[in-house]
Image (cartoon, rainbow, N blue to C red; front, side, top):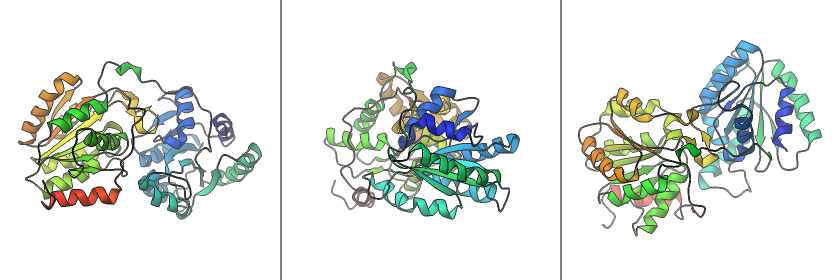
Length: 382
């Protein structure tokens, strides 16, 4: 279905506010909303999906109109609490329209982290008592009109509905999002290569979901290094920092690097406060800040202007921001020294972009985990 037709249909449901977390399957929708409304007024890119539900609820309370919340199905876990304890007709009965990208749909090739989530998506929506309509490549306008006719009385009664979007279910879209203001900054893979080249033999790395982990895997191949010191967090967006903290606390004699993204770090920003409070002296938290949710289409993160170093300092980190590739070796030396004294965060400002031929890990997640646990427990050959 053409995304403009879809949005016009939602107007008939009185939807006049849009928020959520970008998804690659929903790129036509994300690009169109950004093209039409930017990031203010009636469109807000939220830090996480649960926050988006709260924002949508506030809009509905104030206006009487349901808002639309867009998300990838991997974000369903983040909406469980506000859907069940806020929106539900058993509590307040606040209407909302969800648009959910269906990654890992059974029978459709996808990455391993999406397989289980994809299999249980319909059941999750049903458990949340969300009346669900499915959009696929064959959905036509007459089908959609019937969905709208069923959705309208449900929303009017304080219920919520979901449109589950199959791959190819939404087409068209506004112009691609341009974040060209950072053209003079380095690319993430360039910074990653310097970090991995600088690593000590006993360093361990936890890399965030998306292209960061894919680049770490391919850089290890390029540099002739094995993957046994890397945990590639292929899913669980926003949780790489806590995974790294768990490893660092259990292995205080090993330096652990968290290779995080700005969108991922923002998703559960409160975790940084816990990390600072724990005070590990063997953990370096690196935030690659390219101002965008690059792995899922490039939607700006908080307008693309968020800086993590000042926030980290207020939380108790020693923090430094770097934006020149030539300065990165000094920044890495600073980070290693600072981490020996307490919580340390290094923010690296980047431009968007990745190689067109960037591949995906050839190891399975379980193979990655097995090699890492052997190395952490000192059983791997060095």
